[in-house]
Image 1 (cartoon, protein in one colour):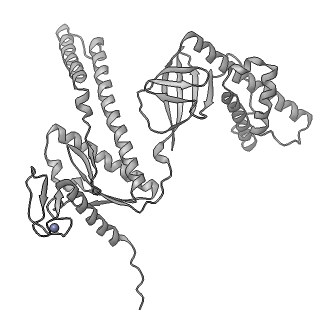
Image 2 (spheres, protein in one colour; image 1 turned 90 degrees about the vertical axis):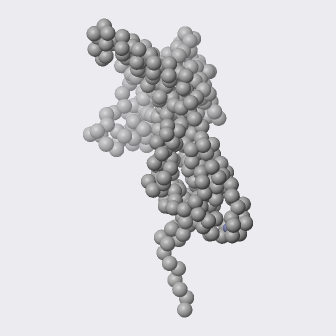
Image 3 (cartoon, helix red, strand yellow; image 1 turned 45 degrees about the vertical axis):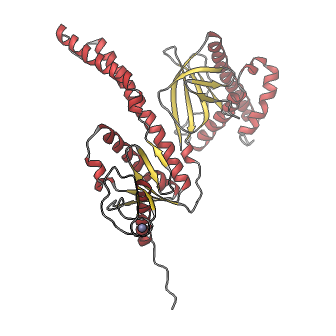
Length: 387
Ligand SMILES: [Zn+2]
């Protein structure tokens, strides 16, 4: 799936000049190509329309004639071939809706150009974005993403700022192949997930990592609200209060983004590794009935994991099975013997029947898997009996 990410660029004066040059160059190439196209049509209207390839092949000649074009990233000029041929295609197909492509004027045209990512020529590291010709520039977007950057469009806005929008191909869209592997997952609080394979995925407490900052802004919001009240200023008018509220919102958003980003990576990995994924139904789980903060946050993550797995499984033709977690933590996954409830502090135990040694959560995950497989089998059409 392709999607866009937008952010602000902080440029040095030399980089600003380069952007202006690149914008001008794309406009110049557009106008050159368009003039050529029109002339060709006037000379012989029966010639077939030019292709993107035809136009791109003219670029080296143009560059020799107009050396300033070499200051542009070459993919941004190739992009012009693509856009112009597309404009003509649209026009030929639907003349009532699309106008004949026009020359671009310095004043009216959009101040932007688009570069293609070739061999990592465009990449993001932390808050820095690498762009062809410009090098590393500060990029602020506030939207973390996973995936590959396909294109970057740099725009000089009417507000006098520089923006960049990235076209991203979501990594989770990578075609998954059948692996014939199945997994049961036990969800928890200190371990976010325990897999029937024995793997344990720890909970990362993003909430705690940002605690100091969050408390700082929480207190400021409260104090500033009180001050505004004492002065008789409406909260909507109190600038200091509004600013603190914005800061607090930024911390919460950061926290949420970090958690979301991690859950995306985890669920994508699960869908890639397993063909059948079995989860316990949290509606019927007693985990949800406890109201501590850690559990509430965990419960949010569990819901999010389920939601992500639902659509990712559907998209990749994998199967998600939801089972009732009844007795999954007390039955022996090796022999099925039920020796009654184990207290929560018992993390490991031996089955009195078959003497298998169990880790509590891994055993639960294994039981969840076997219940899920039973359910998945019931749904399959019955094989024809041969008589
Ligand atoms: Zn047993």
